[in-house]
Length: 450
Image (cartoon, rainbow, N blue to C red; front, side, top):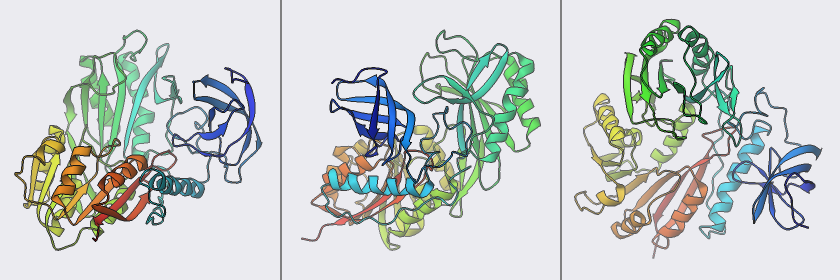
């Protein structure tokens, strides 16, 4: 019997999928992904989407709940698409993430018994994010901020977010009220009309300082007055900027950013060093866990390292922190704005043994202008490392590669591509994003003994 839209089925959830949905099977053999279902549960679920090889569904009734199911603390959990696991006991969530890394290494990297260490859980699974991006909405004349409902662009208005820093939540609550006298309009995706698109808020753990970026379709003189009001209302806001995005796209930021009032950067700290945080710069969003993540990586870089390469260097946080362990550091980053921020960070911390190179990693390492690395440190995007880069590293043969991954599947793929020249000697998952279906890991690969 073929599954049909809106039909209901009673199914046993066999495991958790990588997108945070429970995985079951329909009578016709299709994989059935069920929102908010947990492993082991017996549920009655309605089919909401049918594809040739799978179907999606939502729970109508939980017939046998999991012992790890909890009542969400967040009052928006059932509507908001920001989190995946508000209904799951945190210990069970971390066990799932640990197993995700293990199974990826077994299935993709073909390592029967991966050298997997225990996951590093978050000490604070709530109120941890130092960056929030909130779309504007409008009902009549009333503006609101929130997040999108799961799988849609329907706005769920929020008074606060359980995983955001408290300083960010204060701005989230006040910003719509302060905008009311100016009669701004919210951008409507369906028509392309309206002024306000998003509000981006960043916080610095070390100082409690905040930056606010207004994303709008055009400059309106009243936005300058609104920026002043935001800063007057909250002394922690040190600067307000304006980003112009005129495109009819889901992309949040446009190409042009200007400062409206105050300063364009704030300073935060990681493991004793200071770093500029600007409106658009990349900076890890969980300041407590990032110190644990980076410490794991740094502890695997020998203190006597001669030449260290930091690939996909971003704003230079890892290069800065690792510079004390190497005589020379080459940091490579494609994004010119991030590379510029990195140079400022090196200067801010008085670091003189780091050379920042702007360009594609695969191009720069082919130019033969860098000294051969003894150790390579890399923190690539979710798609992993370019295969050409991996081939080049195998030829250069550094003694160790320290790989920070935000995607267990691409980590496992790259570990497999680096063999047999390199063997995985340790991998430690780190829960950087509690309540969500994301996990990071620090992997150590050493040259294989012949």
